[in-house]
Amino acid sequence: MTFLTVYTEDDVPQTVLETEDASEIAAALKEIDVRLRHWGVVEDLVAGADQERILDAYRAEVERVVAEEGYTFVDVSQLHPEDDPQWPEKAAAARGKFLSEHTHDDDEVRFFVGGSGIFYLRAAGRVHAVLCEAGDLLNVPKNTTHWFDMGTAPDFTAIRFFHDDDGWVGNFTGDPIAARIPDYDAIAARRAAVRG
Ligand SMILES: [Fe+2]
Image 1 (tube, rainbow, N blue to C red):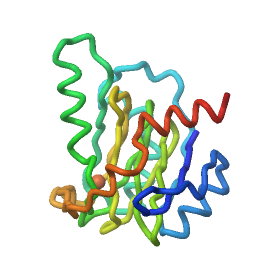
Image 2: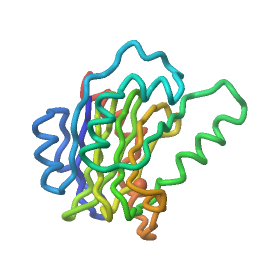
Image 3: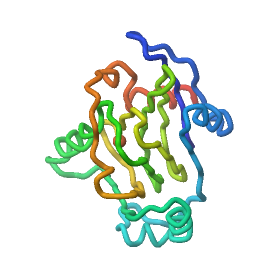
Image 4: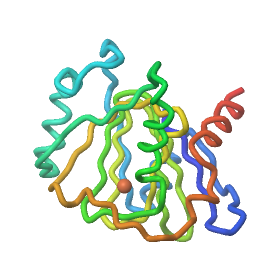
């Protein structure tokens, strides 16, 4: 289930909205032209399934969106905790890649098959932190300033949709805002506390 937190951009960011309500989330994201849709989750997909099996499980939805929105390339990105001494280093490197504010020349479109991650969307003087989970299809329009946090123990499987290969380059803004907004671990802990 999606969890949205909206912050001010201030030096000490204030929380102006915190919600799990689907219609409230949709309304808040619509204001900044970000689209969040939901697909039924395929429950019997085993953890660690490979790309072919995952795309096969969502073939009808994927093909429909590709046809409607003209994507030319679709793949699966996934990261799960491993019992390997190199894992913390690998996880930190993956996390660090898009943890600073950036834009892309293409939309960033992700469907969460499992696990979770947070997209931080900066627009209209606010930062919208969208914690996505299984069933969430998020479309971040091109040129939207954003960053992504998978947390210190990344665990997610996502289908990615691209219009072209070059659009995927990150144009980093150099703005240090990501450092002062609560990170994935903090927001995940906050949600657990809110739920009791
Ligand atoms: Fe990005």
